[in-house]
Length: 173
Image 1 (cartoon, rainbow, N blue to C red):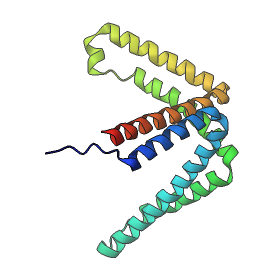
Image 2: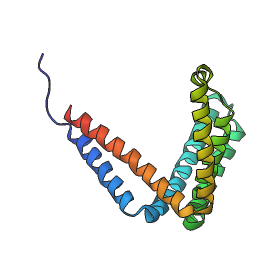
Image 3: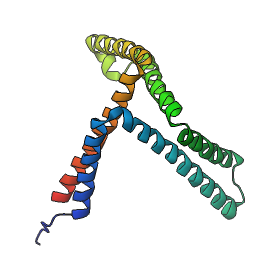
Image 4: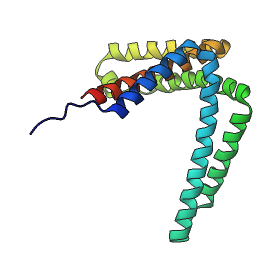
């Protein structure tokens, strides 16, 4: 049985595109956050339409469709349009939401003890210290949203690098 050693070109091209996008995002992190916000709005709209389709298909097959799914779908579409029509305001909201998420996550993590932390007092203490630092970092992000905007762009760029590398590796295997 011979192994096919040919390059998977679609995967290679997608991988390279993801790497180029990652570099582009890192080159202009603040400006690209507006594009990311616009894409979030677009995803809300797409998700809303998908929920409406699921609801209508469910109603056609079972005559038992939840009005809640329809309302959520409509709400997602409205939120998506609001985000897309108010990019600057929405981006600011997302940046503050990111900072608040950091703080809430850290507070919850302080009160959550994992099995590993139960087995080691030192690990539990380190976990608490890291979470306190995360709270401080979240507060700093609240007072300096530009840093939060740049961190969001860097995180998304990092994810794109991972996806790009994974696709390139897949193309060459």
